[in-house]
Length: 339
Ligand code: ATP
Ligand code: MG
Ligand code: FE
Image (cartoon, rainbow, N blue to C red; front, top):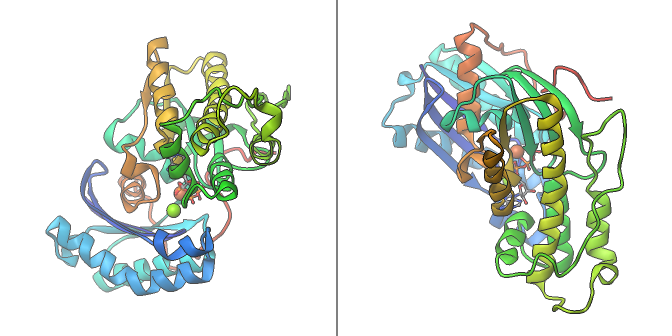
């Protein structure tokens, strides 16, 4: 079954063709990064306008790259939640039109579930496993019992990890998007130049919760308090120290969750899963006997392939969407909503 996956939830206009949920025939990602760069953040109105202009070409290119005609596609899948409403509606409307004109099944997909599922395309794990979602808008540690059964164990109580990377980078003018800029600078920096403290959050009820707002504020406003003066206050050192602190507090909770749940497998996903230091730390978990899976770089950030691959699972189970479905800014990914 060949599924066309469309993703326009934020600033990536993407379309992919995936066969039987595993074989990526094409995965076109047209990023708007350069066009939002002057504003140092995604401008929603600009994003949706650009999607409107690009979506036709992006889908056409995905079909061409796969060597297919529209009638070779068996189903069309599209992100309809969560994300920027105007941007989501562009992909959703296009997908409905594509499906109707070819009389093929149509299905809507939750972006967050798709990020969590992306690693399964290249390195599938047996269920259950611990899921780690680290992206621009989300930081979630969860138990995954099936593609559709995700239970939140812990989440950020304030900023998402990607948001913290982006805000620190923006403050210091490291470049846009911030996560990639910090990762690049950190490679040449001393991660021990600034010893940022871990979060002081210790909730008995929610032991895997995390907070990034304290670390972000420390890195932005209280830098000197964590500096012993022995190394330079350089962008490289700030980046490396911030990155180390941000990743270490996450890994600490991941290790605790693995131990306490007894789960032997871990899958990570989302834009921050592209971070080179986090990837090293995830690799290191293998030494503890855990099976670890995370997506290749292109499948970490927003892409149509993860949408098509997850859609295949639903479609194979006989689940389809219908044209009355609309877009939503809200997350619906989790079995048990966090409270
Ligand atoms: P969400 O998926 O939560 O709705 P989003 O779609 O904007 O949000 P993603 O596309 O998954 O998020 O990821 C973008 C985020 O990943 C940004 O915050 C970006 O800075 C971060 N990011 C990308 N590459 C890296 C990297 N190498 N190191 C750290 N962060 C990174
Ligand atoms: Mg993006
Ligand atoms: Fe995303």
